[in-house]
Amino acid sequence: MGASAREIEREIRETRGRMDDNLTRLEDKAATGARRFGLIAAAVMGVAAVLVAGAIVYRRTHRPTLRDRLEGLSLADLRSLAGELTANLKERAPSVTVRVNEKTEAEPGTMQTIVGKVAPALLGTAGSALLNRLVAAPDDEQLAAAQAE
Image 1 (cartoon, rainbow, N blue to C red):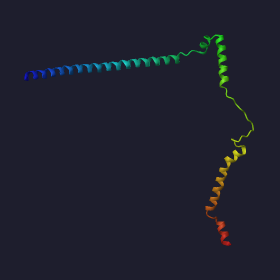
Image 2 (cartoon, rainbow, N blue to C red; image 1 turned 90 degrees about the vertical axis):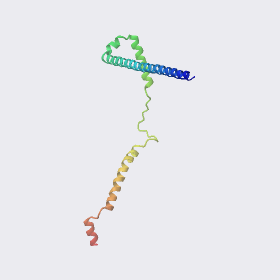
Image 3 (cartoon, rainbow, N blue to C red; image 1 turned 30 degrees about the vertical axis):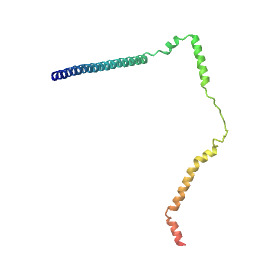
Image 4 (cartoon, rainbow, N blue to C red; image 1 turned 135 degrees about the horizontal axis):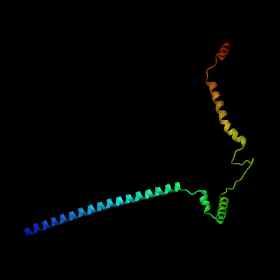
């Protein structure tokens, strides 16, 4: 019984060793596959970026002139284009109401606007002059007149 138990343990160790080797090989394959996928993806993105940049540069440097664009249009196309443009402009035009010398309740009149802007400045100036007069030391002439009385 002892020999068979040792033999079973040895077979178990060998099987575990083979499984570890197989797992190690599979992990290496997965890692190289992921690395390969990453390189392929980076190459595809690089090629796409170069193609997009090339297309942009080509469009910027080879723009069709007005003459080239107009040569491809027929007279009927031009007429339909003009009709579409005028229809779009008519739809987009805002309605405007012009009022001359009309006062509304929401808007103050001319005098109210002027007084509203000037009154704070006048009150501030008058208040500061009054405070300055009250706080300032009396002049020598005023002292002499007060003492003479």
